[in-house]
Image (cartoon, rainbow, N blue to C red; front, side, top):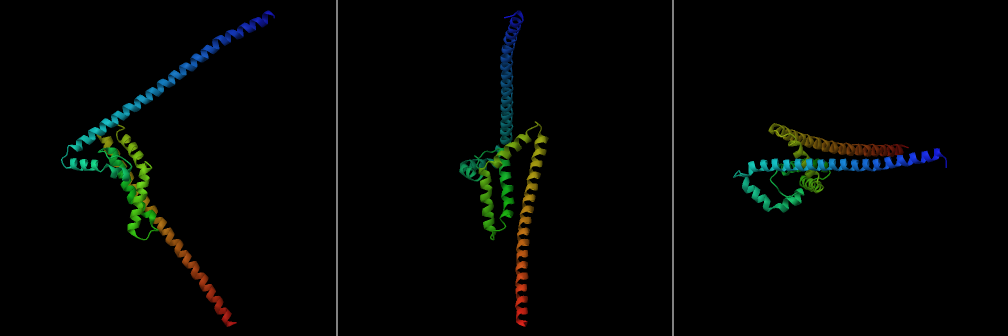
Length: 218
């Protein structure tokens, strides 16, 4: 084996000896950095959650001291099963519960228009109630309420929370308006299709009568 080959072989071993440990160290370092980033994110999430819990407790405490509200709070706590059935959520005197109820209520007012094919208004209301409860058990309202609370307390200022709450109410009213308008549009389309169907039947019947008359004159 020549000197050149020995030199190249030694150089290759040297490169491998330097590169492999460096690669392993770089991989370990990257894993450590990723672990620190995940820990920081989890810590921030815990801080945000504790902050939301504290603000929620403070908000609830302002109202629970009221002698008028306190009896309702106690009563609702005793019928927690009702909240589990209707809202898929344990009762709590909190903004999250209030917002979940608002989403639930506006949906209940929106759905009857989609059941226009049911003749009796009472049955339409019952169908809307069943539909709203099913949506609640899909955790849609609970998820929206959590997002809304986080948005309200995104900034630690009372006016931000107030403006955000008013904005949420406006969005819910717009949501109700759109659903009712869409329900009316569906009902109108059904009536229009029925009218066209009747007109087509009349046209066919008139053509049949005209054919009978021509046959009689022959």
